[in-house]
Length: 333
Image (cartoon, rainbow, N blue to C red; front, side, top):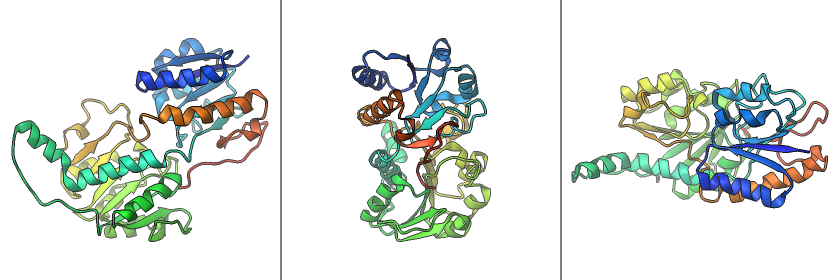
């Protein structure tokens, strides 16, 4: 008998949708849902299936995996699988799948929202409203500007054409220099530092790995134009946060928008909170009204295949079990 554990620190109504969606499809399946990984201990020993996202496990990922002796499969609910596949306590025989190909629209919407908020300086508007201050200034346009998108996978394939429709020049930065609709040109990731002086916006979508750790470092930040903006929708670890803090404090770039951070939740005392040239969103990228409706059918289809023993046929295999070698899929970098 399989036992499913869902670790879901999301709004309660969304968490309930995940539970109800799986429960209706599998009424006889044992399903336990917790809102905080710290509440998961009571269910670890029995669970054979874990449904979660890497950053939901926080610094307890190894504790979770070390105490799940019956774990056979981890179903991620996002694209990135860092803090799962890279954890030493995750056994070789555990199968890992993700969900990708469905996040292009919500991620494109938050990307455009942040690009417009930066270019229009909406935080300044909100500060003025709170102070009852009437002030006008010339806005910057996205039209005619150049954006570099670091990490060209399924999300970027939706975002690129949207930026192009806004009148932007779109440059993809990837490990594979392939042609992608909506992109004016592609540049190899090794040329990032040489490219950034051309960019008005640098937007990050690449997965977090050992190779991409701090890929946007002090050298890359120093090469950016003084009036350029940085947007991170990837993972906190792809940016040297200390270097970015220094650059923003000294106003060496125009500003930044961060949706992801090394430490999440971002501690209340973190100096990022006090910067007036930084927009902070709280890992909101794919948290939207329909996220469970989109993800649950994929989870349920994988559950059907897994329970039937069709492990090699699961959708979006990231790590095959040691006993069942399979294709590895995921967003391209």
